[in-house]
Image (cartoon, rainbow, N blue to C red; front, side, top):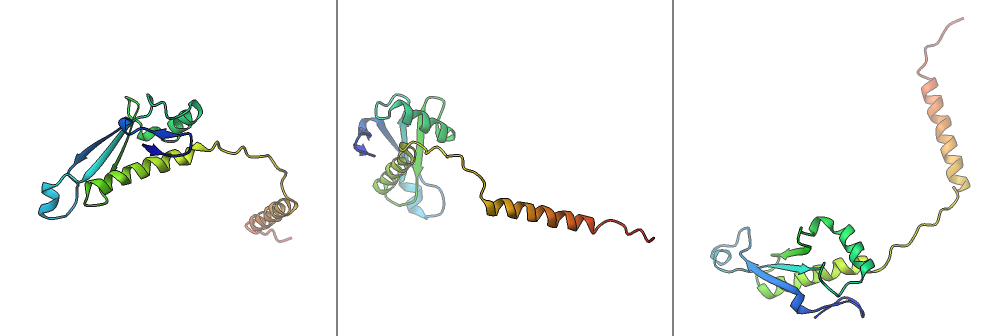
Length: 139
């Protein structure tokens, strides 16, 4: 059971792990051992997420979701299968924790006096700079 919050828990039955060979250097060990872990979670059919959390997850991580509605996470950071599997679970947990809290609506505020003054000063400086580019007409 992957526990994200008190209310969000993903059963282990929903998490499918596959183990394949890692890429990169490593000598004979990398050619013999399937240590890379690939986690597949069908979040579209999962009852663990509420509607609002599911929609935020879909919008934020749309690039990670397959056509079938699966999230695929992989890890080959470690040499052991179990540590890579735990890394995948930690990545999924971090992804869900990032979208659990609803985003705070920004309150519209007025421009500060200082920012208004700085903007006008910058406009004056830019105008003077451009005025200096004009040709001088001797009288």
